[in-house]
Image (spheres, helix red, strand yellow):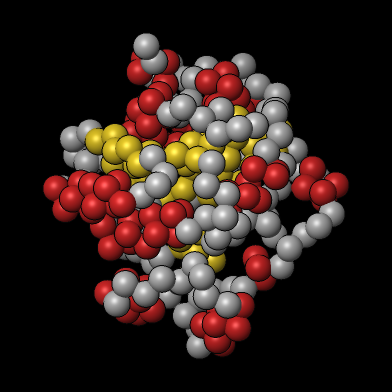
Length: 272
């Protein structure tokens, strides 16, 4: 595997996106591109992306559509459609990654498997303070994070533990829970095999779970990325969850119907 495309989903939070992009540009493994999947942000986000693009040795591209509510699956499909990597890593624009993040995801990559990593959640007050000060966290030592945990500024530090036993990563091949696009990777060919995200999932909720369930039904298995590729997830306000029940009912139907694999409204319509 030679090239990786990192899809960073964002919406109107340039302060967090700055931290996310800064962490990506500090990667040990630089053989990747960054595509910002922008779900309708204002001009301030575009200005930030242009600022980074001018200085970055890594390609940064910006895919944007108008703000018509939460359409994360749609903008991710559009981003994947222009990507050039054979492997996809999805993260959120309010997540910072550690310098070995790409390197370890490359090591875990395996055809026919999706790889979910885990996250550590930062407290509200610490999130706001660190972003306001433009304090970069991804290069801090383990001692720093232990202090954050003791001060209740981060919910856990166990994801820093590294699991060297690869056989443990295959224990739950059909588990879909806690596989979220704040830290999720797969081969692009596997993503295309299910036609990407189902754009019928509009509004917050379960578009990533649906993708993973259809991957599993199509024979793509889970390979655990826990204890290898954690991310730091900044606190944020809850999204509008008015579509939750509709999306959840659709998700339950997908769990039961193992024949539904190919999204009706998916990535194929953006491919040339």
